[in-house]
Image 1 (cartoon, rainbow, N blue to C red):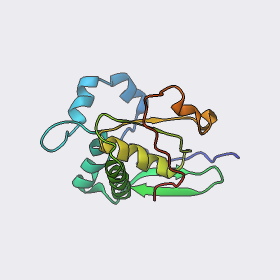
Image 2 (cartoon, rainbow, N blue to C red):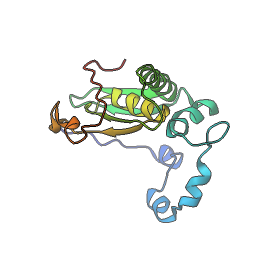
Image 3 (tube, rainbow, N blue to C red):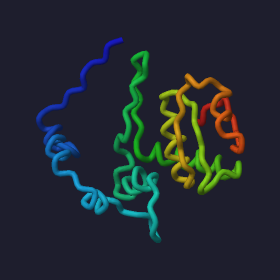
Image 4 (spheres, helix red, strand yellow):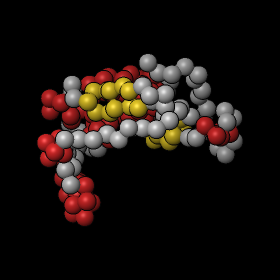
Length: 158
């Protein structure tokens, strides 16, 4: 299946977050990037806060954060508020199952919207998130880590 190229008008390009990607790449500095991070209230750094919460707090909650393009042509848009709500739900599920800061979570989900909810929710909970490829098969991930705690769920988070 071929994908149509997404094009933007000159006005949209001028108002984009990165109107000139080559210049942004050339001028990039980690020190400048660090200044863009808001940090958690009370200190600390959490990628879910940086990716979601600060945008919602700044009044951009209804803005599209991710546009998902499915393999069969479907398109779904997700706002910052929608991602924040579902990431928080997933973080709560992890907490209720005793998974928390410092733990590691490996996911074998396909590239579906729920993958982003799970990834951001995992990071919100202070857990390290690692996506795995489905080519490993259902039993492969536990083989290299005999001391790992394995939790399997066949149902996608909603």
